[in-house]
Length: 248
Image (cartoon, helix red, strand yellow):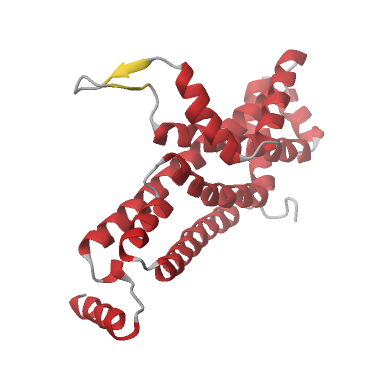
């Protein structure tokens, strides 16, 4: 590892290609901290957005017109407004309307911090798209399948959980994977409210070391790797859940 660090230091001195995170421990720590924050933020938002999508798709089939109208309004709001505007709305408008709390040091702090608002905003944004994705999957399940489940004595909830949802999930996995990839890329917007994610960490490095070109290349490659891992996981998941002969 020391030989690699020495080579990058020589590269910076001899040719001006300064990848400081390869040889400077402080810059590397900041970058890895931003990477871990991005990965953690992405995983939490993915899980919550899938939950929002499943619950929203369930309520879309509710008998109450009011419930269906509320779900439709939710979907339209988050699908038709930019995610950065949504993030700013939650962080600056909604947060200001909430009461302040006292931290362990006796200081007044917001009830929800910037990381919390990033999680809420991105999860609801992606969840709105997931609702439509799961709805399309549910509608693709043949009605005869649902009728067969009901004939066997399944309640509406049991039919949804044990029969419709597993089949619908398999159908909509490709579209779900695309939306989750977009969600991971959307996490860069958390930079706007000071969340120390990958872009924020890279900006700290290049603002001090003045190596914008090199850090942008590193940032681009890092996101390609993150997205490639997510795509690989989704494709493997899709193969594992495939039912031979179903929707072939």
